[in-house]
Length: 313
Ligand SMILES: C[S@@+](CC[C@H](N)C(=O)[O-])C[C@H]1O[C@@H](n2cnc3c(N)ncnc32)[C@H](O)[C@@H]1O
Image (cartoon, rainbow, N blue to C red):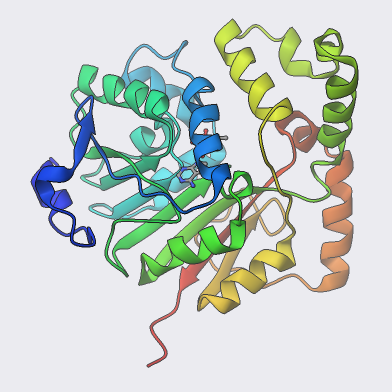
């Protein structure tokens, strides 16, 4: 069980008096501004667009059942060690954090969006989950000590910030040597079909919604609303490539481990080390993402996994 005082004490609060910490719904508000207007804009945007939504999830058992359908979540849950200290940065409503919360792991879940965090907090309170702690916090101003986490996960977040590479650097600082970082980002080519849809929907309006298959699916209106806003009206998004992230890894003393879909093999472990692909192999794999139906459905996404090397000194 996580005791809030145990959590706050090790956090580097830059001379902040403990009595000055604001709470909302018992969630510490440790947001510090980074002087870029986009961060507050995203905070407002995601206060309205709560992601992912809990409509079809009654309780913890339902959430675990749902996460069993995801190979990614299953593999994470099988491979993250017992008792690990995990940070989910940009957790939204916290479903991934909650899905990974068994085995006495200590999960710290941060986001900008009060609305999303409140939904997550209500869920953990209702289901008596004690080892997930939510905070409102900005990736650019993380209130945790350096080298603090065994695992850091940030899925679908950095590409919505004003500087994805800087956000990655900030996260890397908080990873222990030997710790694993898992980053999900929009892909430069994988997202091309989605960019074409964005163009038509922005130009001709919502009457063209049908070009996105999600709108004909049997999912709640709230889910459709969140998807629609997130995909078509997000204040900011950037797109990235495999080698760009390999470069981020190098600059942060992080060794490449695996990537989905490029190096991924369903029979292997997620955290088993793979070789970095050569440029020719990768060229075809990256280009083929444009025509991959799953990528087209999910909006063009890839995941990069790295492991922090020991400090060079
Ligand atoms: C598309 S949602 C993804 C939510 C969740 N990770 C998922 O996969 O469903 C992006 C989330 O990133 C959060 N976010 C964006 N910029 C952030 C920042 N600077 N610090 C913390 N969270 C941020 C947003 O508030 C939002 O909840």
